[in-house]
Length: 191
Image 1 (cartoon, rainbow, N blue to C red):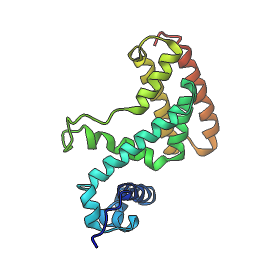
Image 2: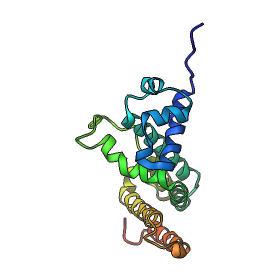
Image 3: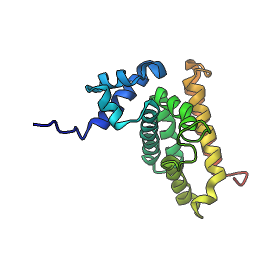
Image 4: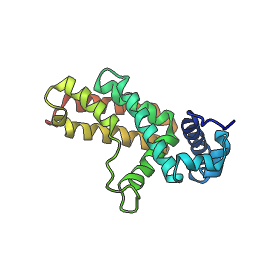
């Protein structure tokens, strides 16, 4: 009797890759290690993912959707920003992976997928909708504010993840972050 393909294997492979990334970063993410951690063999991994970069692209899309989910859970733009920061601080390795490899895997001239349309930007779209609901207009009317909020959230996340802001000062930094988001959302300078 022939073996039936496991319909959940792709998810298991990505789960294994995500755990390996969290534990060992780039060095720990080999096709053989992923296969072993997923409870399968290397050829089965290659049937679903062309190479390690393909697995990384799958992880990036997963992380992109997780970030969007953290934004969506908040009912206001401020809560969305807080959720985004909570995700980044709660999943620092995944957040670093996303920002270290997103450009190289999707947009750089070296990428085998350069010029291929990305799978969208669900986090950006979620925040656009929140800003539109709060301020009216079209979602595109909020681009400058969206960019300002992203810069504040991402900068805060990276400063805290890298411990550039010392852990003993993290609570104060978080308070400053929240106050900055509130100030931007008051739109004093016409963003």
